[in-house]
Length: 549
Image 1: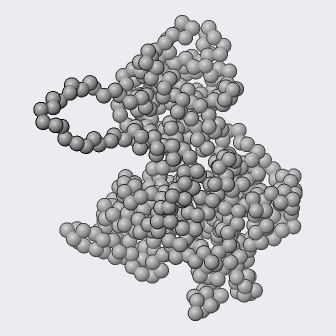
Image 2: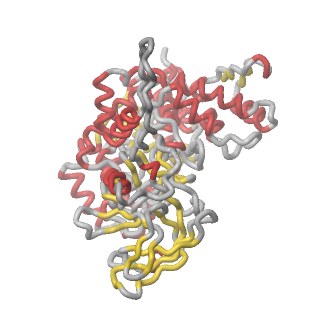
Image 3: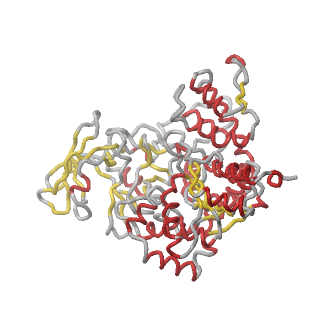
């Protein structure tokens, strides 16, 4: 006899609502489960943008709860939403990225023991391009103000200074999904709360019923407040190998005794303990440190960490083991050539970066010298031309004004930090922005170009900016404004010391620059690998696939 057939209606409601941060409309849930005594129809949606990470196990475990409670669950691959969210999934990648999400989410569900035969899978474009849905979008657009649409998507849709109309439509589509999927409730992260309240306000205006909303907490990242697909250091990819998992967890922020800002503890709370379903969670601690230790509840684990009887090293080693165990079935699913090809097609920039790294790796030469062979004289190996030779620094624009002898140029005073001090920079940005758009902000500067005079004034660095193909739109590449003035921007895999000065005769920068482009999330990349400050990626505002120079 299955669990759902032995549960009372009250037990079903308790299982549906457990471990959630917030529930809107619990009375509606009780009406369906207790009074009408029928399965609650719920949907969870995910937009195929960045690569899914271990934070996805949080909704996966909750979906398991919903199924055990007898709910009818639909998983929506919201492909059209991914495009509307400032083109996080470019149109030409929409189909293949949706397929990747479908396969990786199914593999993750299997990994946590969720039976797929009890789930319904839909793609947004299955119905969102229909005549009826489109007419409802037009109806909503005549009712919803710009303020309400922008507010609803504030924590979900990528925010830019001048938002695209597509981002304002996003909440409208998500609200209508509830009606067209014919559900009683929508399940999602608490970051979607504003979209959920938007739906509760506007669906009744169209004559549709108000739905209930179930909200998971957001699991902190390894190095920040939220696990993010766009920040490689904050998350563990579902396809990361064992070594990558161990490396990322070793680097994770895990202060001794700190239980409030700890992504590892949060993962144990919201994923590992629910999966154990009452069984203890074991940490295989080394014998010299006391041997294996187990905790029956999350509260026991948190208390041990807070009281410092479980140390950060023990927690990290234990989480590494448990997370690798969860990921192994997913890795095996994607071990085939067909699946590897799917991953490369869905994220071509990652494939390009991997191939570039492989090509750059030194090869081991084997064989012995024959007797009497003299060791040849060797010349120093030529330094490869790559991004590590460029000294890209976070600088703060202290002052910005028009060049006295050129209307198209800005004359900028830039603070490059203690090591390089304040320098003068001339940039050709005056036709594309106002001085106040840059004044006081932090930007990226190529510091080791040879200084050159521009209309009589020497420029000692170059500000990095992205531009479209015909150079009619130009956007400065900004680091997170919390970045440290004077810090060097890095590209993973290219960490050599920069040249003291890039040789203009050998055109080093001219060979590096063509591989600098923005990705689908506006992040600056070199050969597909993101330019990173100590607090995150560096970005343009709206340009995708744009050259950086």
